Structure formats: C-alpha cells, structure tokens
Image (spheres, rainbow, N blue to C red):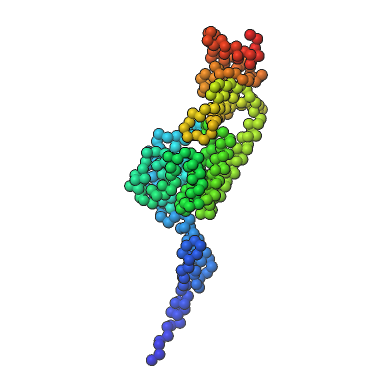
Length: 358
C-alpha cells in the first residue's frame, strides 16, 4: 500500500504555517521568518532591539517606590548646590523620570539603580546594603556608576570619559540620563558658586562622557542633544545680558570682591550681586577662583539685602560707585558704620569714592 495523502485542507494548513529560522545579527539572536509578511519580521526585529537596549526585567512599581524611599532616607541631610538648596532626592527622581518617560526604559534594574545611583558615592551606604535590599544586579549597576572618591576630582572626571564606552548598555543609558538632569539643573538652577565659564566647561565634559554612551537608546541621545543645546543658548543669552550691565557698587578685600550690577529696563533698575573668592572656601574645587552670583532683584531694597548677605561689606575697600547711586550708597554705609573713631578711616574712603565733600 502506498503512503496515505493528507487531506487538501490539512496540507494547506501545514504549509501555511510560517517557519522561523534563528539567525545571529548585529543586535544578537534574531529570527528571519520564512513565508511570513515583512511587517511581522520587522516587529520581531523591533522587539529584539528594545530588549537589548532597554533591559528585559519587568518593573514592579513597589520595588521602585522602595528604592526611592531608600534613597530619600540616605540623602535626607543633603541638598543640591543651587541657590535654593533643593532637596538632593529631587535629582535621583529626575533621573528615573528621564529614563522612563523620555527614554521609554521600563527595565527594573536600570530604574532602581537610577534611584540609588548616588547613595554609595555620596552617603555612607555600602554595596552590601544595596545587594541585600535590591539584589546583585542593581548593586552591580550602581557600582558601575560610582566614582572612586579617594581620587582627586580631575582624575575622576577623566576616568568617567575613559570608562564610558566600556560600560554596560544599562549603565550607558543611566549616565546619559544623569547628564541630562544635571545639564537642565545648571541651565535653570545653577550652583550658586558656578561662573558661566565653569558651566560651559561642564557642558563640554558631559559631551565627552556621553560620546562613549551613544547608540544604545536613540530617544535619550536626542534628549541629551536638546538639553545641551538649550543650555548653551541660555548661557549665550546670559552673556549678552551681562554685557549690558553697569557696575553700581564694587568693594574689595584681601579675600575677594563684591560687585553689585545693575541694568536699566523700561520699568526701572534690576540688580544682581557677584562675589569672587580668591582663596577657595570649598573642598575639592578645581577652580582657583570661586564665583557666587545671586538671582536678580528689581528694587534698591532688594539690592541692599543682597549686599547684606555679606554683613561687613561696608568695611571693605570701596572701588567704584555708580554716579546715580552715590547718595543711596552713602546712606547705607553710614547706617552700618556708626560715627566712632575706629570707623573713621572707612567713612573717609567712602566719601572720596562717592565724591562727597569732607
């Protein structure tokens, strides 16, 4: 007897079933469907790339909340360096948000490590604690992102550039998100003691770090490019504004100087205060000069309040006083230097600079 033939319907159903032949591609194991549409092949390829780029461990919301609460407790006594001294935990939360919202990262390990990425470097947290609470993968990823604080600042910055390209895909995405958030902060809430030159230098350094982290998550790459472009536009605008400022009052001493700047607007004068410390007062600072720049105020009373953040400014050497403000400055100086013998030398200097008759 010959072999029985399958019914026509069964044969057609069997032949119609698409075959899937595994094939190794540039993104890892992929498949080339045989007998299926091109759209299905593209879908499978897209899924494979997403797993490679964004991680594959599905996020449990409770774990992320646990990591944020852990980080908030560890950073509870820390503040950011902006003028408002924002709570430090704002930064890790911003990094998590950048990854999840802008980078569309849903991998649990990456997002937990984002919440925890500064805990070992900036608090007394240990990698053992992280492994105990969040597992070895999260602890290992935080380790990839943690600088060796026994090295000086310049060495740490150099190593970040050198190590970027060798980092894991998860670490690369987290590094980019971290830089995005820091750049946005120095654009709208810069550290009080950062000059425009130092902010520009941070942007250049960030670009060098991120150059080794690109081509893992295109959306994060794009978000970084937008953030750094906006930061440079703001710095340029600030520079143009500074060029229109006039010196209202300038005083100097052995350790530095204070300059009250003013700009004329249609609604009146606006003021801001810049202070230069010639001897660094902060540890681990690379700049020989530390500059503090205040926010802008729109009244003379506000300008005086800025000066009074340095209580003994009237005892510094007066270097310049704007002609339009000589009377106001003299009045403020007199209220801070009572007519006693030990203040006479200061008052004489102020009279000369304000061009008042002795």
